[in-house]
Image (tube, rainbow, N blue to C red; front, side, top):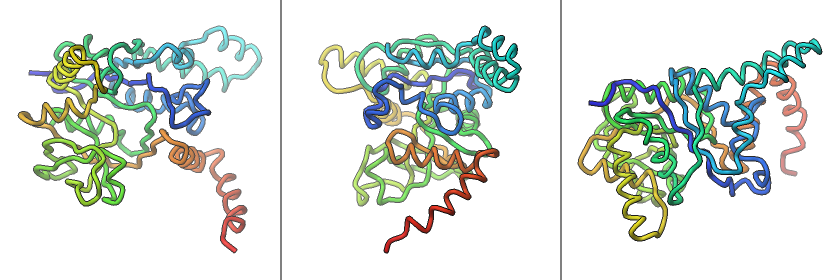
Amino acid sequence: MAPRTIRRAVIPAAGLGSRLLPLTKATPKEMLPVGDRPVIEHTVRELISSGITDITIVVSGDKSLIQEHFRPNPALVTQLRADGKQAYADAVEEVGELSRQGHITYLYQHGPYGNGTPVLNAARNFGEEACLVLWPDDVFVADVPRAQQLIRAYEATNSPVLALMPMDPAHSQRYGVPIVKEDLGDGSLRITGLVEKPKPEDAPSHFAAIGGYVITPGIVDEIREQVRRWDENPDGEVYLTDAINAYAATRAVYGQVIAGTWYDTGNPGAYLRAQFAAALAHPEYGPDLRRLAAELAPTTGTE
């Protein structure tokens, strides 16, 4: 039986960020700022605050800025302290400390294209342990971190878990929509699979899968089987959703409705919304920005 708690996590960060071009031509989308820190740092902090002690970030060859961001830089800290810039020195030192707290390691993605591949790349080191998978372009604002909510759901079920949010059925074609077999209360749902981007009239529920997962060895086995078939016939992509659906056909999978606010940063409009929300919530800058928004509001109305 798999361990009934989770200490490991995977952050797939090898994507091209094509929906944010040209902004991501030279800067990885994971390094775009949301508030006063890059978006991937929000994910790393969420994992560490939820008790994760081993984080694997799966990158491509042009993502060295991610490693540089989290790498400790004692020389810079020493220089800042010598210049009397203690607050800046503390901030730089604290970011470097995240690498130790989360025991961050990096892997270069290899294998077929698709979001199942980085999970398989990392999972070879996990043995029979379950792990979390969180995308690095999501930001959650919640009293209890999303990762911790997923861990609790896994501890209660000892089964794979998907992060869910309530969805306006009119938006179903943006998401994977779970097929709900049973509502167990407290946001816990037994599901039998996902339908990718269905039409509103075909959506099997009013929930959306939003890119947070507890992955068990059985799911990894299903990804491995996909890759085996791809090797025989190199066509298409290796999708995590397909592995979950194959697993759910014969075994239990659960969804956990996440309590909190989700900000996706994967497209320009959503990224601006996340930036705006983070700026308004900032204790130092928020009040001034709220005043600015109020001053500009009259000019945004229609004539």
